[in-house]
Amino acid sequence: MIISPPQGCFTCYDFFDYYPLKLSWIIVAILLKLRTYFNFKRYAVENIVYGIIYFDLLNVLKICSFDAIIKNTILAQLTLTKNNMKITTFLLILSILAMGCSKPSYKKNEIINSEKEATSESSIFDIPVNQKLSIDQQIASAVLAAPVEGRGEAMVYGYSESGEFMMLREGSNDFICIADDPQKDGFQVVCYHKSLEPMMARGRELAAEGKTREEKEEIRNNEASSGKMPLPEHPATLHIYYGENAYFNEETDSIENAKYRYVVYMPYATQETTGLPLSPNESSHPWLMFPGRYNAHIMISPEN
Image 1 (cartoon, rainbow, N blue to C red):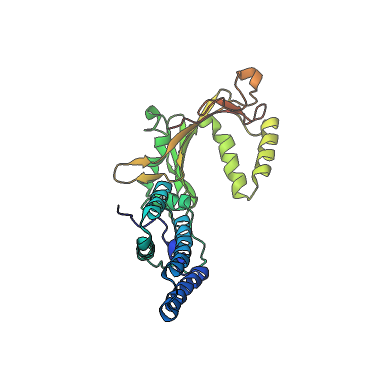
Image 2: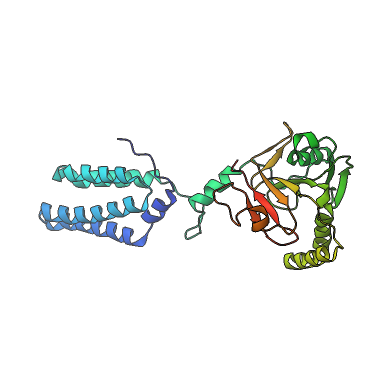
């Protein structure tokens, strides 16, 4: 049976360079020398050496990322091995493990990313991050958040080369789209009904002034109550196309690794007036967020 080097064999290497294991091998060497010079009984020395190597092998198997079945198979085969072959067999297996675990490039005791983090890093390998798209690409990507029939004539906002928020294209229908902000992590484009623009624009103004989320909500709530900030008279939808690892594919003019979310604003709606739950019954089910407030809305998050 061929045993491939274990995953994460940096741990094995550190183990072979670990002080207690070095000490055990020094003891083995001393015992073998004593046997030669003082003619100790062969079986006594071999049993001691056998015990030391067996203990070390158990620790190696424990530390290295072997499958449990492989570990048990190795131990079972060693148990069945003839006595006069035990030491040779153990030495051979330990040598294979030592050679299979090549020395890593990092320093000892350095914190290593977990397997989950490594998987996450590999999943975004070669994926563009914080893309700086041209004006045409920003428009092409932003309108993908809108319904197909509303993309051609939608107004589009985006960002200049210096990162300034600006209008990229005037529109003539009921939709307003916003391109991804390259200064923020992830990728997100949105499109919403124009009746939501007073609330959205006010939010951008307050954010530019450095207001916190709580301050923005308090100000907009007061202005909505006083009538200073107009609210939609009918349900109005915000379409979000987003993803942590999403990006705009410049070759196909499409957005990869993204998913949709729909936010239907119904100012001051409640559970009683809509019949909706205040949390989703199941994944992707609609529910009502901020009931009774100026920004009450239905959340719909499809699974894919």
